[in-house]
Image (cartoon, one colour):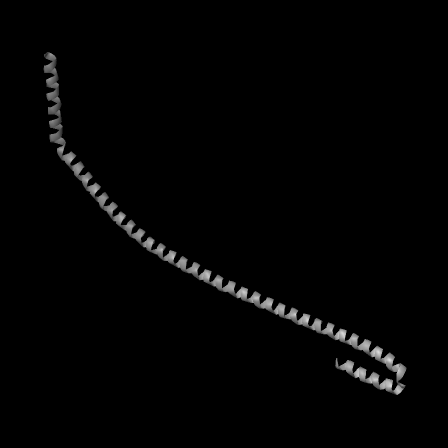
Length: 159
């Protein structure tokens, strides 16, 4: 029981000590917590202002980013259309070049064909002239032979 009384007295001492400390320190403790509450409130207000500014800046950058995305898409679309136009022009140029080459080749072939025909005609006429000359030489006078040769030369010149 003595221990219980001793324990009760210690408990009472602690409570009295705490009451004395609370009485003398309450103004200081209240001031500390009041100052702390004010500084926390100021800190929260500043944090709120900073958060608002950050949201505004974020919204502004999102708008700018959206505008840049639209501009990028416009530039890409323009570049694609220009590339398509340039590609079409190149295709048209190649087609025109190939058509000119084909026309020139056809012309060359036609000329070669005409030359070959003319050459064959000349050879044929020459062989006819030779046969005729041989025939005529045996049957005609020299004057008649000369007239025939002049006429054959005129015919060859026309061809």
